[in-house]
Image 1 (cartoon, rainbow, N blue to C red):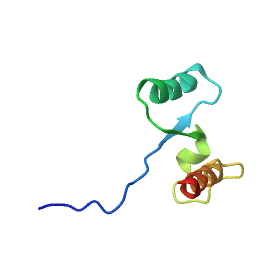
Image 2: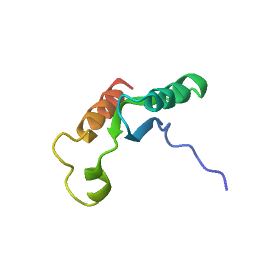
Image 3: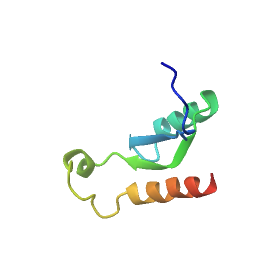
Length: 79
């Protein structure tokens, strides 16, 4: 059956469980953007035990998901 394309989804990569300010974090971003041409959001979700054990709970103070939401909404408005 033929499938009609209804929209043009915008895909971006989110780096999670990132050890901030490490060489590996910088290389992963560089590889995805420069070598693979993947659109990577600026926001990163750090490696935090609170995220690992907090399934179903409200994110802890200082969480990065709010910044991610703001960034995604900016892209949506700009598109």
